[in-house]
View (tube, helix red, strand yellow):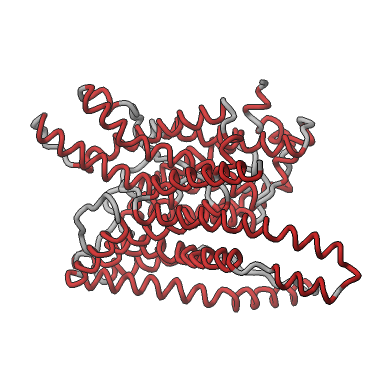
Length: 523
């Protein structure tokens, strides 16, 4: 293995031209306006200080520039991984605080332990990703992570995320809940807390949602207006396209201005609060392990391991989804043209390289106040639509984030928390619509097209042989649909009834059992 295999940037950086730089700068600037509010909001989901979201974008962006292979991958905070981290910190932090108070006579609040535990979780995820890369285990995992499992897991996790943000949108505090029926317990707690709603917080939430809806409504007319102007200026008829501008960024700015003008923090509206200027201090990710005795350490590792496994799986699944959804030119340049690797082997090689990029990002991040990085389909869509040419676009986005961290922290401190939570809910709301996929799978499995195909067979005797072959294949197709329906239903049920990490593991077990049954039946 050579340097070119581990650091692909040595292959494409010497060929970087002026034609690329303008597109990469535009992509980077656009990305930064989306990432800044998004990353801070996801840090809140992870039960960490909002500024940690900004820290968690800097290292992954720089590492992907050096080690990554796709111009459309953007590693950083992600909704699902943030939810898993938040649940891990809540359960392990609360347990550890109670244990230390009862047996060690130490009065330590759970949130004081969150940062140390988060660093440990990030380090463990990095170690797991390194093992996955070194052993090529990602090749063997793929059959146990079908699209139906990924879809159900994403929908279930989205429901948990939306429920976790309602307390910030209403301005109420809830008692921590865990265990079975977590989503239902959270929903019931929110219903009981409605009489305690902070009216100023609710007003700002509704205002943020209204601004976001208005900007979404104006998107198509503005795009049409800009296309007409460009057509008149150039004399060439332009193809209609969707306008792409950072709605969350504008909403956050407007909500912050309104909040400060009317003095809403004085009426109980939560804001981000104190944000330290500059880069974070270096941490020892194993600090929490060495501070306490062996019993506490072993119990803590047992507590966080299921969450670590889920984070590794989600990170891997997201990489697969992004590479499948957004085919890139950079990967072809590196592997097929420069390294002369076949297309099939290049795809596997690129997947492994992106896993290595995540592992290195998580390893460095565990010492620099970053939580587990992950790819994101929404950020990849931004890079594709703004025509990113190389991973250098992440560097330009990183420069903007560094300017915010060094010069604009005072402005970040005044961002209202209800606006951040509203952006999360509105951004993830379309994902909930995927609940209908279960119904579609059931209908397709329950009412196969066999009768329709056979009726065509009678009416069209000239294609008798072709139709009969299709009719014979339909039962096998129906069996495949039933398999995906069962996987989808079991995964979604596990995520909602229990929690996301048990849901994805249960979905993988269901997939393995079904594949074993089908294999034995075919034999």
